[in-house]
Length: 303
Image: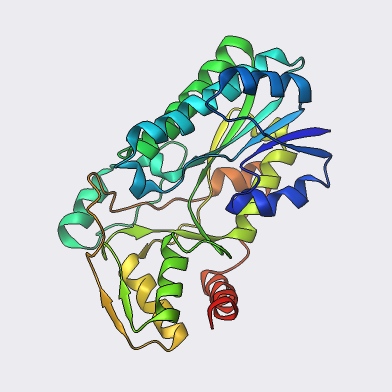
């Protein structure tokens, strides 16, 4: 089996690659995704059985200020890769890294924004109608619609994983969990943005298992979008306080110190029911255990 992997140097790609190598030969995409001709030629040369498409700009906040770049890389780049599949016979199974951000605005988000909490817990799933509300999310949703088009138009088989907030990074502290941990390890002051949004969180090892479940179960997964859960929303303020407690940190958190996000989504939470029914996958590592592992790594790195 030949697998073409994009984003092999990223957070997920670095860790997924060794698992993919157990299935067959893994090729890392070398072309610039925005270069249609180069992407097409590389796909024709490799003739992959599976394409695992992870490459993207993923810093949601930056997409509010770099709209064109995010659209070019995340949407146009994905369209180039999808169209390149038409030059391979049989066409590869296209497995795409989407995002829970595609759900965007939902009625519960207004309630959380106004009150800072919620009356009834809501978990998004594959039947929730997306309303993407950030340039990053709009581009990702556009890719999903293009996959549906490609399936109808020329029979491309695909699956899409609407990933939730995943943590456990070892070399990047841009994203919220690692950002909080590293600030608290380095200083008695922690500067953060909004305190009231809710997110659900998944540890990296569980996400890798989810990817492999979708890749290895082509017949049952093809043609589906999957939310990954877990159905356990946490307020960002509570996340920061929990990490502070685990670190025995008694410094000061300064809220609202980041640039405003025009179109901030105040509630993102999902379940994993469909993915579990199709593959048997479910999260095995608790949030608490995942935080302990992440803290342990960054302590060794920083202290």
